[in-house]
Amino acid sequence: MQLRVLAFVLAGGKGTRLFPLTKERAKPAVPFGGRYRIVDFVLSNLVNSGIYSIYVLIQFKSQSLLQHLREGWEVSGLLKNNFIIPVPAQMRSAEEDWYRGTADAIFQNLNLIQQADPHIVAIFGADHIYRMNIRQMIEYHVEKRAGVTVASIPVEKQMAIEFGVVEATSNGNITGFHEKKADAPTIPGDPTRVYASMGNYIFSTDILIREILADQKRKDSAHDFGKDILPRLIGRVDMYAYDFQTNIIPGDPFGSPQYWRDVGTLDAYYEASMDLRSVSPALNLYNRQWPLRTAGYFDAPAKFVFDEDGRRGMAIDSIISGSSIISGGSVRCSVLGRSVRIHTGAEVEDSVIFDNCDIGRHAKVRHAILDKNVKIPEGAEIGYNLEKDRKKYHVTESGIVVIEGHQSTVDIATLQV
Image (tube, rainbow, N blue to C red):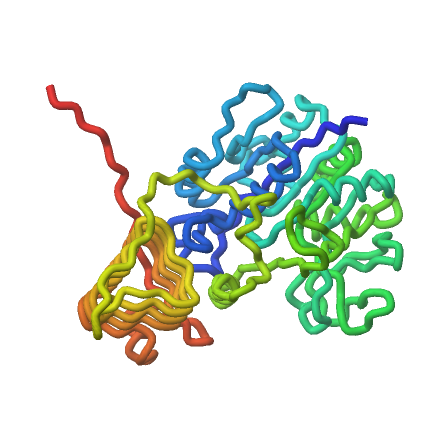
């Protein structure tokens, strides 16, 4: 049987805990890994899994995200059922309001589901760092004859307070949902871990439409899948937890552990970025059978210049993106975006540097995140005196200095007449 699959990517969250990185952009548009955006992970997972009919539901501070989707994810439309289309709030609720929750976002776009008439609907979040063969989750859904399948990942029991926890039997049948409860039930046979919901769902279409319509009539509903829709389906519909640990990515070595990170805070974002520096990182960006897709920039290669004592351009245990130039400075254990300049004698260590930043001569930067277009003056020191840094910048509890950037202006073509 050829399944018709329609996907919705929920990309409208505010991402307030990532401020100031989300001051002028939605969380899914935050850069990651030098040249990517967070949203690239879920879109790559869908496309690599053979799912090409995708609506991206946007809302807060969406301009940066829209621009990235246009530059990197436009689909030619040669086939009418192949598309990646951003969709703002449609104001279809009774109050003609913005998306009030994840379930309301789907309600406001029910017409898109009815027009496509898919067999199943995949509803995925846009703000996690992971790779997943979604086709395998769909096969599991079909094999179990499930009405709903929830992607789940085992996490340590003490982390239950941070996630929605799925209670399931040994064969995966879901018997309960527990929203951020310290005493949530553990995995059968494993008292040290719980099943955390990844916020990714597969629905049989008729069940999804029925429950979304019913939820809209409830005045006490938050119109959220985790809080409202899924708990009310317990005992009424066959629901299963799909164990993300069983997922196999083509091209990865057999037995490779699965990587998933919720980068909801600055510290979590920084740690996930630092994971990329490893000799054999848990998140493999170099698997050609499962590429991480993004916008196709016309960048020059990265360049390292000067080989003199006290003026040597080098980078160690780092990721350096296109058009960056290390000109007599040094970079260690860091991730650099596109078109970054590191000048003579400058030192960058354990840091994440976004596009178009400029680190002046003999400046020092460590344990920092620099947003786009930040210029560090000659001789300045960032991350060496946190009390001083707190007076000018945002500093996390763990001591990461975050420097707010500014959005570059859009070049407008001129015509001489």
